[in-house]
Image 1 (cartoon, rainbow over the protein chains, first blue to last red):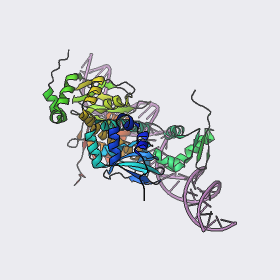
Image 2: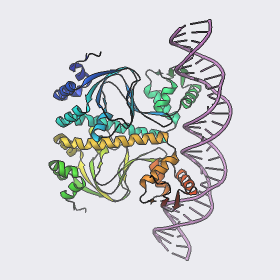
Image 3: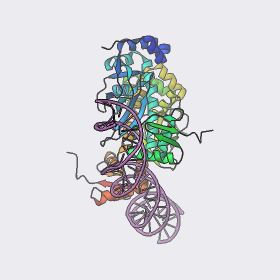
Image 4: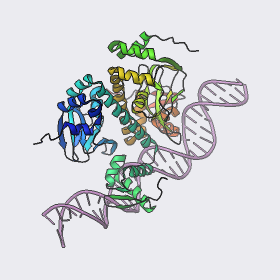
Length: 219
Length: 219
DNA sequence: TTTATTCTGTAACTTTTATCACAGAGCTTT
DNA sequence: AAAGCTCTGTGATAAAAGTTACAGAATAAA
Protein backbone atom coordinates (compact mmCIF):
# COMPACT_ATOMS: atom_id res chain seq x y z
CA UNK A 1 0.00 0.00 0.00
CA UNK A 2 1.34 3.36 -1.02
CA UNK A 3 1.78 5.81 1.82
CA UNK A 4 1.67 9.49 0.96
CA UNK A 5 5.14 10.16 2.30
CA UNK A 6 5.48 13.44 0.53
CA UNK A 7 5.28 16.81 2.17
CA UNK A 8 3.89 20.09 0.95
CA UNK A 9 7.29 21.62 1.63
CA UNK A 10 8.91 19.24 -0.84
CA UNK A 11 6.23 20.07 -3.38
CA UNK A 12 6.96 23.75 -2.96
CA UNK A 13 10.65 23.08 -3.41
CA UNK A 14 10.04 21.35 -6.71
CA UNK A 15 7.53 23.93 -7.89
CA UNK A 16 8.86 27.17 -6.45
CA UNK A 17 6.20 29.05 -8.37
CA UNK A 18 3.67 27.79 -5.88
CA UNK A 19 5.75 28.11 -2.77
CA UNK A 20 7.00 31.61 -3.48
CA UNK A 21 4.39 33.35 -5.55
CA UNK A 22 1.20 31.70 -4.51
CA UNK A 23 1.42 29.46 -1.46
CA UNK A 24 -2.32 29.61 -1.06
CA UNK A 25 -2.91 28.10 -4.48
CA UNK A 26 -0.08 25.66 -3.89
CA UNK A 27 -1.72 24.50 -0.70
CA UNK A 28 -5.04 24.09 -2.47
CA UNK A 29 -3.40 21.97 -5.15
CA UNK A 30 -1.56 19.86 -2.66
CA UNK A 31 -4.67 19.30 -0.57
CA UNK A 32 -6.79 18.23 -3.53
CA UNK A 33 -4.18 15.95 -5.08
CA UNK A 34 -2.82 12.55 -4.35
CA UNK A 35 0.65 11.17 -4.82
CA UNK A 36 0.89 8.39 -7.38
CA UNK A 37 3.98 6.26 -7.93
CA UNK A 38 4.66 4.47 -11.18
CA UNK A 39 7.26 2.02 -12.49
CA UNK A 40 9.43 2.53 -15.57
CA UNK A 41 7.66 1.85 -18.84
CA UNK A 42 4.21 2.57 -17.49
CA UNK A 43 1.76 3.85 -20.09
CA UNK A 44 0.47 6.99 -18.42
CA UNK A 45 -2.01 7.84 -21.13
CA UNK A 46 -2.87 6.92 -24.67
CA UNK A 47 -3.99 9.00 -27.62
CA UNK A 48 -7.75 9.25 -27.64
CA UNK A 49 -8.15 8.73 -23.90
CA UNK A 50 -10.24 11.16 -21.94
CA UNK A 51 -8.27 13.24 -19.50
CA UNK A 52 -8.17 11.99 -15.93
CA UNK A 53 -6.52 14.97 -14.30
CA UNK A 54 -3.46 17.11 -14.36
CA UNK A 55 -0.13 15.83 -13.12
CA UNK A 56 2.78 17.59 -11.53
CA UNK A 57 5.85 15.48 -12.05
CA UNK A 58 7.75 15.02 -8.81
CA UNK A 59 10.29 12.39 -9.81
CA UNK A 60 11.24 10.50 -12.95
CA UNK A 61 11.09 11.23 -16.66
CA UNK A 62 8.10 11.03 -18.94
CA UNK A 63 8.11 10.82 -22.71
CA UNK A 64 5.27 12.25 -24.78
CA UNK A 65 5.09 10.71 -28.24
CA UNK A 66 3.05 9.90 -31.31
CA UNK A 67 2.81 6.46 -32.84
CA UNK A 68 2.08 5.53 -36.45
CA UNK A 69 -0.17 2.81 -37.79
CA UNK A 70 2.95 0.76 -38.56
CA UNK A 71 4.17 1.10 -34.98
CA UNK A 72 6.89 3.68 -35.57
CA UNK A 73 7.16 6.30 -32.88
CA UNK A 74 8.35 9.88 -32.58
CA UNK A 75 8.96 11.76 -29.37
CA UNK A 76 7.32 15.16 -29.11
CA UNK A 77 9.08 16.16 -25.89
CA UNK A 78 10.08 14.86 -22.51
CA UNK A 79 9.14 16.02 -19.05
CA UNK A 80 11.29 16.08 -15.94
CA UNK A 81 10.78 16.71 -12.22
CA UNK A 82 9.31 20.11 -11.48
CA UNK A 83 7.44 20.15 -14.77
CA UNK A 84 3.76 19.91 -15.43
CA UNK A 85 2.29 17.43 -17.82
CA UNK A 86 0.59 20.19 -19.67
CA UNK A 87 -1.24 18.07 -22.13
CA UNK A 88 -3.68 17.17 -19.39
CA UNK A 89 -4.52 20.77 -18.74
CA UNK A 90 -4.69 21.50 -22.41
CA UNK A 91 -7.17 18.69 -22.96
CA UNK A 92 -9.31 19.62 -20.03
CA UNK A 93 -9.54 23.22 -21.07
CA UNK A 94 -10.34 22.49 -24.70
CA UNK A 95 -12.44 19.52 -23.66
CA UNK A 96 -10.77 17.15 -26.09
CA UNK A 97 -9.13 13.78 -25.67
CA UNK A 98 -5.38 13.29 -25.52
CA UNK A 99 -3.66 14.08 -28.81
CA UNK A 100 -0.62 11.95 -27.94
CA UNK A 101 0.71 9.17 -25.74
CA UNK A 102 2.84 9.32 -22.62
CA UNK A 103 5.05 6.70 -21.05
CA UNK A 104 7.40 6.81 -18.08
CA UNK A 105 11.08 6.41 -18.87
CA UNK A 106 11.97 5.64 -15.28
CA UNK A 107 10.19 4.90 -12.04
CA UNK A 108 8.65 8.11 -10.82
CA UNK A 109 5.98 9.92 -8.95
CA UNK A 110 3.34 12.47 -9.79
CA UNK A 111 1.05 14.65 -7.82
CA UNK A 112 -2.27 14.00 -9.51
CA UNK A 113 -4.90 16.70 -9.37
CA UNK A 114 -8.27 15.34 -10.54
CA UNK A 115 -9.99 17.06 -13.44
CA UNK A 116 -12.85 18.59 -11.49
CA UNK A 117 -10.53 19.93 -8.82
CA UNK A 118 -8.28 21.39 -11.48
CA UNK A 119 -11.14 23.17 -13.18
CA UNK A 120 -12.25 24.50 -9.83
CA UNK A 121 -8.77 25.80 -9.06
CA UNK A 122 -8.42 27.32 -12.52
CA UNK A 123 -11.54 29.29 -11.76
CA UNK A 124 -10.41 30.23 -8.28
CA UNK A 125 -6.80 31.16 -8.99
CA UNK A 126 -5.85 33.37 -11.89
CA UNK A 127 -2.21 32.37 -11.43
CA UNK A 128 -3.12 28.80 -12.24
CA UNK A 129 -3.89 29.91 -15.77
CA UNK A 130 -0.66 31.84 -15.86
CA UNK A 131 1.29 28.75 -14.92
CA UNK A 132 -0.43 26.54 -17.45
CA UNK A 133 -0.02 29.25 -20.03
CA UNK A 134 3.72 29.55 -19.75
CA UNK A 135 4.29 25.81 -19.96
CA UNK A 136 1.94 25.50 -22.89
CA UNK A 137 3.69 28.32 -24.71
CA UNK A 138 7.01 26.58 -24.33
CA UNK A 139 5.66 23.28 -25.59
CA UNK A 140 4.14 24.96 -28.60
CA UNK A 141 7.47 26.39 -29.67
CA UNK A 142 9.15 23.04 -28.99
CA UNK A 143 6.74 21.21 -31.21
CA UNK A 144 6.96 23.88 -33.93
CA UNK A 145 10.69 23.43 -33.98
CA UNK A 146 10.18 19.70 -34.25
CA UNK A 147 7.96 20.14 -37.30
CA UNK A 148 10.71 22.14 -38.91
CA UNK A 149 13.32 19.51 -38.16
CA UNK A 150 11.24 16.62 -39.39
CA UNK A 151 10.17 18.46 -42.52
CA UNK A 152 13.51 19.92 -43.55
CA UNK A 153 16.46 18.17 -41.97
CA UNK A 154 18.11 14.97 -43.04
CA UNK A 155 18.24 12.12 -40.60
CA UNK A 156 22.01 12.28 -40.16
CA UNK A 157 21.80 15.92 -39.10
CA UNK A 158 18.92 15.25 -36.76
CA UNK A 159 20.78 12.30 -35.29
CA UNK A 160 23.94 14.29 -34.64
CA UNK A 161 21.96 17.10 -33.04
CA UNK A 162 20.22 14.52 -30.89
CA UNK A 163 23.47 12.94 -29.80
CA UNK A 164 24.98 16.26 -28.85
CA UNK A 165 21.90 17.36 -26.98
CA UNK A 166 21.38 14.13 -25.11
CA UNK A 167 24.97 13.31 -24.27
CA UNK A 168 26.53 14.01 -20.93
CA UNK A 169 30.29 14.41 -21.03
CA UNK A 170 30.17 12.96 -24.52
CA UNK A 171 28.48 9.80 -23.27
CA UNK A 172 25.10 8.31 -24.08
CA UNK A 173 23.63 5.17 -22.61
CA UNK A 174 20.94 4.31 -25.08
CA UNK A 175 19.96 1.67 -27.61
CA UNK A 176 19.65 2.38 -31.29
CA UNK A 177 15.99 1.45 -31.05
CA UNK A 178 15.37 4.15 -28.46
CA UNK A 179 16.98 6.76 -30.68
CA UNK A 180 14.91 5.57 -33.62
CA UNK A 181 11.73 5.90 -31.56
CA UNK A 182 12.69 9.40 -30.51
CA UNK A 183 13.46 10.53 -34.03
CA UNK A 184 10.61 8.77 -35.77
CA UNK A 185 12.55 6.34 -37.93
CA UNK A 186 13.58 2.69 -37.89
CA UNK A 187 16.38 1.07 -35.96
CA UNK A 188 18.32 0.03 -39.06
CA UNK A 189 18.58 3.60 -40.26
CA UNK A 190 20.02 4.71 -36.95
CA UNK A 191 22.47 1.79 -36.76
CA UNK A 192 23.74 2.54 -40.24
CA UNK A 193 24.15 6.27 -39.65
CA UNK A 194 25.90 5.68 -36.33
CA UNK A 195 28.28 3.23 -37.95
CA UNK A 196 29.01 5.80 -40.60
CA UNK A 197 29.75 8.40 -37.93
CA UNK A 198 32.07 5.90 -36.28
CA UNK A 199 33.93 5.33 -39.54
CA UNK A 200 34.40 9.08 -39.85
CA UNK A 201 35.86 9.13 -36.35
CA UNK A 202 33.08 11.21 -34.83
CA UNK A 203 32.23 8.68 -32.13
CA UNK A 204 32.74 5.14 -30.96
CA UNK A 205 30.06 2.52 -30.47
CA UNK A 206 29.48 -0.32 -28.09
CA UNK A 207 26.40 -2.04 -26.78
CA UNK A 208 24.06 0.46 -25.12
CA UNK A 209 26.72 3.11 -25.36
CA UNK A 210 27.81 5.91 -27.65
CA UNK A 211 30.98 7.88 -26.97
CA UNK A 212 31.29 11.18 -28.78
CA UNK A 213 34.80 12.37 -29.64
CA UNK A 214 35.26 15.99 -28.75
CA UNK A 215 37.22 16.91 -31.86
CA UNK A 216 35.33 19.86 -33.21
CA UNK A 217 34.05 21.45 -30.04
CA UNK A 218 32.27 24.76 -30.44
CA UNK A 219 34.83 27.46 -29.67
CA UNK B 1 -4.10 57.90 -43.72
CA UNK B 2 -5.94 55.06 -42.11
CA UNK B 3 -9.08 56.00 -40.26
CA UNK B 4 -10.18 53.79 -37.40
CA UNK B 5 -13.55 53.01 -38.90
CA UNK B 6 -14.18 50.05 -36.71
CA UNK B 7 -16.55 49.91 -33.79
CA UNK B 8 -16.36 48.11 -30.51
CA UNK B 9 -19.67 46.50 -31.35
CA UNK B 10 -18.19 44.91 -34.44
CA UNK B 11 -15.25 43.71 -32.39
CA UNK B 12 -17.63 42.10 -29.90
CA UNK B 13 -19.47 40.45 -32.76
CA UNK B 14 -16.29 38.88 -34.06
CA UNK B 15 -15.07 37.90 -30.61
CA UNK B 16 -18.25 37.02 -28.77
CA UNK B 17 -16.18 35.84 -25.83
CA UNK B 18 -15.47 39.43 -25.02
CA UNK B 19 -18.88 40.84 -25.76
CA UNK B 20 -20.81 38.19 -23.88
CA UNK B 21 -18.62 36.93 -21.10
CA UNK B 22 -16.44 39.85 -20.31
CA UNK B 23 -17.45 43.15 -21.89
CA UNK B 24 -15.30 45.01 -19.40
CA UNK B 25 -12.17 43.24 -20.56
CA UNK B 26 -13.30 43.56 -24.15
CA UNK B 27 -13.64 47.30 -23.71
CA UNK B 28 -10.22 47.51 -22.15
CA UNK B 29 -8.72 45.64 -25.08
CA UNK B 30 -10.51 47.74 -27.62
CA UNK B 31 -9.50 50.97 -25.93
CA UNK B 32 -5.82 50.02 -25.72
CA UNK B 33 -5.57 48.71 -29.28
CA UNK B 34 -5.39 50.17 -32.68
CA UNK B 35 -6.75 48.93 -35.97
CA UNK B 36 -4.12 48.06 -38.53
CA UNK B 37 -4.84 47.24 -42.15
CA UNK B 38 -2.52 45.19 -44.30
CA UNK B 39 -2.34 44.12 -47.95
CA UNK B 40 -2.11 40.54 -49.20
CA UNK B 41 1.35 39.03 -48.94
CA UNK B 42 2.45 41.30 -46.12
CA UNK B 43 5.06 39.74 -43.84
CA UNK B 44 3.48 40.22 -40.43
CA UNK B 45 6.40 38.81 -38.50
CA UNK B 46 9.54 36.82 -39.02
CA UNK B 47 11.16 34.07 -37.01
CA UNK B 48 13.52 35.59 -34.48
CA UNK B 49 11.73 38.91 -34.27
CA UNK B 50 10.82 40.28 -30.89
CA UNK B 51 7.11 40.40 -30.25
CA UNK B 52 5.40 43.70 -30.94
CA UNK B 53 2.01 42.93 -29.47
CA UNK B 54 -0.90 40.58 -29.72
CA UNK B 55 -3.27 40.68 -32.66
CA UNK B 56 -6.92 39.91 -32.95
CA UNK B 57 -7.67 39.11 -36.55
CA UNK B 58 -10.69 41.04 -37.78
CA UNK B 59 -10.58 40.32 -41.48
CA UNK B 60 -8.45 38.27 -43.84
CA UNK B 61 -6.41 35.10 -43.55
CA UNK B 62 -2.96 34.71 -42.07
CA UNK B 63 -0.57 31.83 -42.59
CA UNK B 64 1.92 30.82 -39.91
CA UNK B 65 4.85 28.88 -41.34
CA UNK B 66 8.41 27.73 -41.00
CA UNK B 67 11.04 28.17 -43.68
CA UNK B 68 14.14 26.07 -44.31
CA UNK B 69 17.64 27.21 -45.16
CA UNK B 70 17.00 26.16 -48.76
CA UNK B 71 13.85 28.26 -48.91
CA UNK B 72 11.30 25.48 -48.64
CA UNK B 73 8.31 26.30 -46.50
CA UNK B 74 5.76 24.44 -44.42
CA UNK B 75 2.55 25.85 -43.04
CA UNK B 76 1.95 25.26 -39.34
CA UNK B 77 -1.60 26.57 -39.34
CA UNK B 78 -3.77 29.35 -40.66
CA UNK B 79 -5.79 31.95 -38.83
CA UNK B 80 -9.12 33.45 -39.83
CA UNK B 81 -11.34 36.30 -38.66
CA UNK B 82 -12.33 36.01 -35.02
CA UNK B 83 -9.13 34.21 -34.16
CA UNK B 84 -6.21 35.40 -32.12
CA UNK B 85 -2.69 35.26 -33.37
CA UNK B 86 -1.67 33.32 -30.35
CA UNK B 87 1.97 33.14 -31.12
CA UNK B 88 2.29 36.73 -30.04
CA UNK B 89 0.85 36.00 -26.64
CA UNK B 90 2.90 32.89 -26.33
CA UNK B 91 6.10 34.80 -27.03
CA UNK B 92 5.28 37.60 -24.68
CA UNK B 93 4.47 35.27 -21.84
CA UNK B 94 7.55 33.11 -22.30
CA UNK B 95 9.61 36.16 -23.17
CA UNK B 96 11.05 34.58 -26.32
CA UNK B 97 11.21 35.70 -29.91
CA UNK B 98 8.89 34.41 -32.59
CA UNK B 99 9.43 30.74 -33.36
CA UNK B 100 7.85 31.07 -36.81
CA UNK B 101 6.85 33.44 -39.59
CA UNK B 102 3.47 34.88 -40.48
CA UNK B 103 2.25 36.30 -43.75
CA UNK B 104 -1.16 37.56 -44.85
CA UNK B 105 -2.91 35.51 -47.51
CA UNK B 106 -5.34 38.29 -48.32
CA UNK B 107 -5.81 41.93 -47.48
CA UNK B 108 -6.97 42.13 -43.91
CA UNK B 109 -7.18 43.95 -40.66
CA UNK B 110 -6.08 43.30 -37.13
CA UNK B 111 -6.74 44.87 -33.81
CA UNK B 112 -3.26 45.26 -32.41
CA UNK B 113 -2.82 45.31 -28.66
CA UNK B 114 0.70 46.46 -27.74
CA UNK B 115 2.83 44.17 -25.61
CA UNK B 116 2.84 46.24 -22.46
CA UNK B 117 -0.91 46.74 -22.60
CA UNK B 118 -1.40 43.04 -23.13
CA UNK B 119 0.71 42.14 -20.14
CA UNK B 120 -1.20 44.66 -18.07
CA UNK B 121 -4.52 43.18 -19.15
CA UNK B 122 -3.31 39.65 -18.54
CA UNK B 123 -2.61 40.71 -15.00
CA UNK B 124 -5.88 42.50 -14.63
CA UNK B 125 -8.24 40.00 -16.21
CA UNK B 126 -8.13 36.34 -15.36
CA UNK B 127 -10.32 35.59 -18.36
CA UNK B 128 -7.63 36.92 -20.64
CA UNK B 129 -5.46 34.03 -19.59
CA UNK B 130 -8.37 31.68 -20.11
CA UNK B 131 -8.84 32.91 -23.64
CA UNK B 132 -5.17 32.67 -24.52
CA UNK B 133 -5.06 29.28 -22.90
CA UNK B 134 -7.81 27.73 -24.96
CA UNK B 135 -6.41 28.98 -28.25
CA UNK B 136 -2.93 27.87 -27.33
CA UNK B 137 -4.19 24.42 -26.37
CA UNK B 138 -5.84 24.05 -29.75
CA UNK B 139 -2.72 25.12 -31.62
CA UNK B 140 -0.62 22.70 -29.66
CA UNK B 141 -2.76 19.76 -30.68
CA UNK B 142 -2.80 21.04 -34.28
CA UNK B 143 0.95 21.17 -34.44
CA UNK B 144 1.31 17.79 -32.75
CA UNK B 145 -0.89 16.29 -35.42
CA UNK B 146 1.24 17.97 -38.04
CA UNK B 147 4.38 16.36 -36.62
CA UNK B 148 2.70 13.00 -36.92
CA UNK B 149 1.69 13.61 -40.51
CA UNK B 150 5.08 14.86 -41.61
CA UNK B 151 6.90 12.06 -39.81
CA UNK B 152 4.72 9.14 -40.83
CA UNK B 153 2.60 9.85 -43.86
CA UNK B 154 3.58 9.72 -47.48
CA UNK B 155 3.25 12.85 -49.54
CA UNK B 156 0.46 11.47 -51.73
CA UNK B 157 -1.67 10.78 -48.66
CA UNK B 158 -0.96 14.16 -47.19
CA UNK B 159 -1.75 15.81 -50.49
CA UNK B 160 -5.09 14.07 -50.84
CA UNK B 161 -6.04 14.95 -47.27
CA UNK B 162 -5.07 18.52 -47.98
CA UNK B 163 -7.17 18.67 -51.14
CA UNK B 164 -10.21 17.29 -49.40
CA UNK B 165 -9.82 19.60 -46.45
CA UNK B 166 -9.21 22.73 -48.45
CA UNK B 167 -11.70 22.20 -51.24
CA UNK B 168 -15.08 23.84 -51.34
CA UNK B 169 -17.64 21.94 -53.38
CA UNK B 170 -14.79 19.90 -54.77
CA UNK B 171 -13.04 23.02 -56.06
CA UNK B 172 -9.68 24.51 -55.20
CA UNK B 173 -8.22 27.70 -56.60
CA UNK B 174 -4.58 27.29 -55.83
CA UNK B 175 -1.21 26.91 -57.52
CA UNK B 176 0.94 23.84 -57.14
CA UNK B 177 3.58 26.03 -55.56
CA UNK B 178 1.20 27.13 -52.84
CA UNK B 179 0.35 23.53 -52.02
CA UNK B 180 4.04 22.66 -51.93
CA UNK B 181 4.70 25.51 -49.51
CA UNK B 182 1.88 24.37 -47.28
CA UNK B 183 3.03 20.77 -47.21
CA UNK B 184 6.75 21.44 -47.00
CA UNK B 185 7.89 19.97 -50.29
CA UNK B 186 8.81 21.17 -53.76
CA UNK B 187 6.51 22.18 -56.57
CA UNK B 188 7.62 19.36 -58.88
CA UNK B 189 6.62 16.73 -56.37
CA UNK B 190 3.14 18.20 -56.08
CA UNK B 191 2.74 18.56 -59.86
CA UNK B 192 3.72 14.94 -60.35
CA UNK B 193 1.40 13.60 -57.70
CA UNK B 194 -1.50 15.71 -58.92
CA UNK B 195 -0.98 14.49 -62.47
CA UNK B 196 -0.96 10.94 -61.16
CA UNK B 197 -4.25 11.57 -59.35
CA UNK B 198 -5.66 12.98 -62.57
CA UNK B 199 -4.61 9.86 -64.49
CA UNK B 200 -6.39 7.77 -61.89
CA UNK B 201 -9.52 9.86 -62.42
CA UNK B 202 -9.56 11.32 -58.92
CA UNK B 203 -9.54 14.92 -60.12
CA UNK B 204 -9.02 17.19 -63.08
CA UNK B 205 -6.41 19.89 -63.41
CA UNK B 206 -6.21 23.27 -65.01
CA UNK B 207 -4.24 26.41 -64.31
CA UNK B 208 -4.88 27.62 -60.76
CA UNK B 209 -7.64 25.10 -60.38
CA UNK B 210 -8.20 21.59 -59.10
CA UNK B 211 -11.55 19.88 -59.46
CA UNK B 212 -12.10 16.87 -57.25
CA UNK B 213 -14.41 14.17 -58.59
CA UNK B 214 -16.86 13.06 -55.96
CA UNK B 215 -16.64 9.37 -56.75
CA UNK B 216 -15.88 7.86 -53.39
CA UNK B 217 -17.69 10.22 -51.09
CA UNK B 218 -17.78 9.25 -47.43
CA UNK B 219 -21.19 7.63 -46.85
C1' DT C 1 -0.66 41.52 -80.82
C1' DT C 2 3.69 41.02 -79.10
C1' DT C 3 6.09 40.41 -75.02
C1' DA C 4 6.65 39.08 -70.52
C1' DT C 5 5.35 36.52 -66.64
C1' DT C 6 3.55 32.87 -64.21
C1' DC C 7 2.29 28.27 -64.00
C1' DT C 8 2.45 23.41 -65.24
C1' DG C 9 4.44 18.94 -67.16
C1' DT C 10 7.93 15.84 -67.35
C1' DA C 11 12.23 13.29 -68.25
C1' DA C 12 16.36 11.91 -66.14
C1' DC C 13 18.82 11.36 -62.31
C1' DT C 14 20.42 11.37 -57.43
C1' DT C 15 19.76 11.02 -52.78
C1' DT C 16 17.56 9.59 -48.89
C1' DT C 17 14.87 6.63 -46.34
C1' DA C 18 12.43 2.32 -45.54
C1' DT C 19 12.09 -2.66 -45.56
C1' DC C 20 13.46 -7.44 -45.46
C1' DA C 21 16.30 -10.88 -43.99
C1' DC C 22 19.75 -12.63 -41.48
C1' DA C 23 24.15 -13.27 -38.81
C1' DG C 24 26.56 -12.66 -34.99
C1' DA C 25 27.92 -10.22 -30.65
C1' DG C 26 27.20 -9.50 -25.88
C1' DC C 27 24.61 -9.84 -21.73
C1' DT C 28 21.57 -12.68 -18.39
C1' DT C 29 19.65 -16.48 -16.54
C1' DT C 30 19.57 -21.14 -15.55
C1' DA D 1 28.54 -23.52 -19.64
C1' DA D 2 24.45 -23.67 -22.27
C1' DA D 3 20.43 -21.43 -23.62
C1' DG D 4 17.89 -17.47 -24.38
C1' DC D 5 17.35 -12.72 -24.82
C1' DT D 6 18.47 -8.24 -26.57
C1' DC D 7 21.15 -5.48 -29.34
C1' DT D 8 23.91 -4.38 -33.39
C1' DG D 9 25.75 -4.76 -38.28
C1' DT D 10 24.91 -5.10 -42.91
C1' DG D 11 23.76 -6.55 -47.65
C1' DA D 12 20.20 -6.27 -50.95
C1' DT D 13 16.48 -4.09 -52.59
C1' DA D 14 12.66 -1.04 -53.13
C1' DA D 15 10.26 3.03 -52.68
C1' DA D 16 9.80 7.78 -51.95
C1' DA D 17 11.25 12.29 -52.40
C1' DG D 18 14.35 15.88 -54.01
C1' DT D 19 16.97 18.12 -57.87
C1' DT D 20 18.11 19.73 -62.38
C1' DA D 21 16.79 21.24 -66.52
C1' DC D 22 13.81 22.51 -69.86
C1' DA D 23 9.61 23.04 -72.79
C1' DG D 24 5.39 24.64 -73.44
C1' DA D 25 0.72 26.41 -71.92
C1' DA D 26 -2.07 30.03 -69.99
C1' DT D 27 -2.59 34.50 -68.68
C1' DA D 28 -1.38 39.38 -68.02
C1' DA D 29 0.86 43.53 -69.46
C1' DA D 30 2.71 46.64 -72.82
